[in-house]
Image (tube, rainbow, N blue to C red; front, side):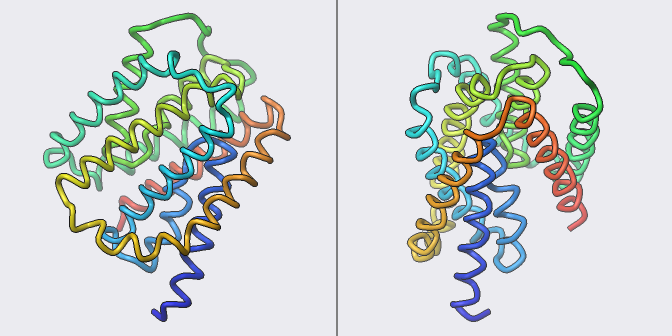
Length: 247
C-alpha cells in the first residue's frame, strides 16, 4: 500500500477512535483497531494503538481533572493490576479465538438488556471488595481482549452511576491498565515498537482533535443519552469481538 494511502487511513482511524474515547472514556482500540488492522499486521498496529490510546487518556485526564477521583479508582486499579498479570500468565492457556467471541456474545446480550430495561440492576453502595473484584475482572479481560474498561462500564451502568461519576473512576483505571500493558510489551517484545514512532507524528493532530471533539460531545449529552450511547458502543464492541474470533 502506498505510504500516503496508509497515512490517510491511519489518520482517519485514530481520529474516529479518539472521538469515541473522548466521548465515552473507552473503546479507542475497538474503533481504531477495526480500521487499522485491515491494512497493517497486528504486530505493527497494536503498539501504535496502545500508545495513541494512552496519549488520548492523558489528554482526557487533564481536561477532566476537576472530576477525576484517583482515590476512588485505587481499589479498581489494585485489582486490575493483578488481573493484567494473571492474563499475561494465562494467555498461553486460554485460546483468545474462543474467549473473545464468547465475551463478545455476553457484551451483545448485556448491551441489548440495557436498551430495553428501564431500571438499574444494583444499588450504588460502597463495596470496597467488590470494586477490587471488578477491577480484577477488568484487568483480566483487558489482557485478553484489549478492553479493560468494559467491566467498570458495566458496573457503573448496573449501579446507575451518573456519567461524570463513571468517568471519574474509569479514566484513571484505563490509563493505569494501558501503562502496565505497554510496559509488559516493552519488556517482552521491545522490537514490536520499532516501527511505531515513525508513524506517530502523523497521528498526533488527529488524535487530539478527535479527543477534543469527543469531550465536547460528552459535555452536551444527558446522563440518559450517555447511557444509551454507551450501550450501543458495548453492542458494537461485542460484534467486533465476535468477528475477530472468526479471523
